[in-house]
Image (cartoon, rainbow, N blue to C red; front, top):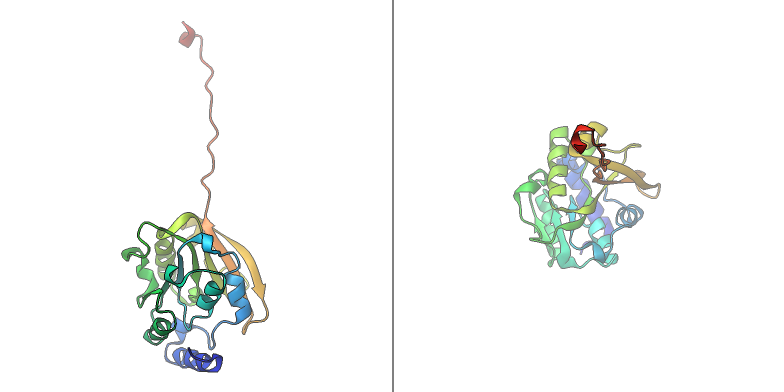
Length: 208
């Protein structure tokens, strides 16, 4: 396993080669990692991680008690995917675009309980973000949650896009102990509003 300084150098090199895909010059810090996994427990079942990079969030998930074999890591960067394979040999690692999530089999009949996302949604076109969320929620159980971090002061997924997918976002928390400071949002399916029962009073004709 690489040291923290080696990981930072690898991350910086990846950013230099593809700044729009990586979108950060250094890996996420431990405070952000602890925040984004704070609501995830082994009871959640399988966990899907998008854009794990050097594995900072992955290690935080393991520290929360998630079994390595219950992790599916989706990483497009070949250099990061190779490192993840070496560091987490029992996890399911797929070197593919996260926008293709709907096309792949992940956990069989056991849907994921949580999705942890390190993807740079703000630098992606809306169509790509839509495909990623649609695919992720196709693998997520009904009461599961999608956790997304951002460097922006607001949710990185626009309200119109959330509305179109029937989702809602809520602020989980933020940390200044990250470079740069970051926030985490929890995205979930909206509950279908309960339609009130309408009772029709019988007319005189109905009583004949």
